[in-house]
Length: 125
Image 1 (cartoon, rainbow, N blue to C red):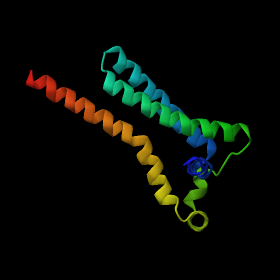
Image 2 (image 1 turned 30 degrees about the vertical axis):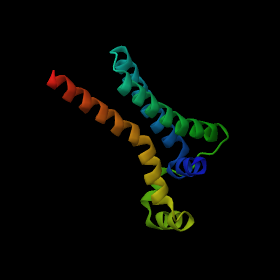
Image 3 (image 1 turned 180 degrees about the horizontal axis):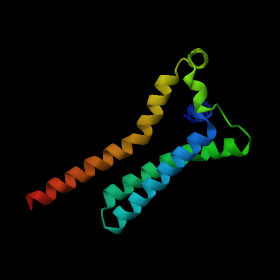
Image 4 (image 1 turned 90 degrees about the vertical axis):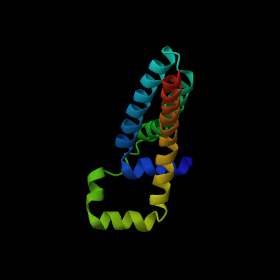
């Protein structure tokens, strides 16, 4: 999984991926804090999990960025020849991207499930 994260960061641009997941981490962290302050522990813990997932990706990106790896520029992928070259070099890229996205989004889905469950329980009272 670590290598998939590094490749993802490099191909999407180290700066872009680091900032993207860094902001997602901060957003999830703020949501987690708000939920925990409201005493909504299950949803708060799940939001913390999302923040940690995002922090891992941003952390690997930060290390690469410090080491000088800037990765590709997003606009490079607008050229069809560049996309073909990336596809040939990384044949499992789409599957790896889906795996990374799912691992980051599953905590969000679980948070929604907990919120829906809480709303349903309150409506029965």
